[in-house]
Image 1 (cartoon, each protein chain N blue to C red):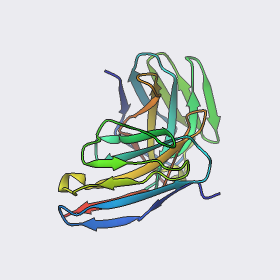
Image 2 (cartoon, helix red, strand yellow):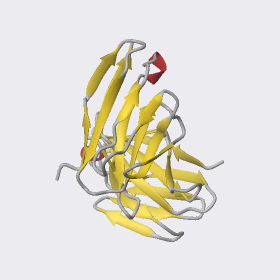
Image 3 (cartoon, one colour):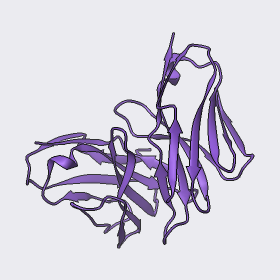
Length: 111
Length: 112
């Protein structure tokens, strides 16, 4: 069982560049979400989706876009990278009991 | 405002020295409280879900308990492999979906 797969694991961007972080899950979970994790701030919700075609903003959505065309995939797009977006990004899916299953994370550095 | 606070921020134990981690919360309408373990460079891994005050869950050397205002993660006779960051999260019914609010975690180091 692969669970939640994120790519890439590491990425360095220049300010102003755009990129997409990929996330895929094979557990048929309806609910998926993206978090960023920064020292001393815990996991903060960026965007989430309750099913294919449905997305909504979380706590810190500015500078990020998402889409959900299938149950399996939930990519996160950085529109114009800024140094403040340097962080570790986690994708997660949740089962019906609301247990969250996380990917391995993407460590992003914006220079 | 819904809030989750974990203490201590860091804890260093000797192997076999039992202790407890605290997660205090202020939320309106708790739907569930979750404990996760996070190893360096990895994503959080689910440990327990607690739903109501008085509930307890156990797994190997870990036991989680819940009151109306806080949860404890008790670690009995820890081993070095228990070293990790332990995260607490609460699920609230606010809005159309049940969001998870995470604490900042307790970094546990168990020395042999």
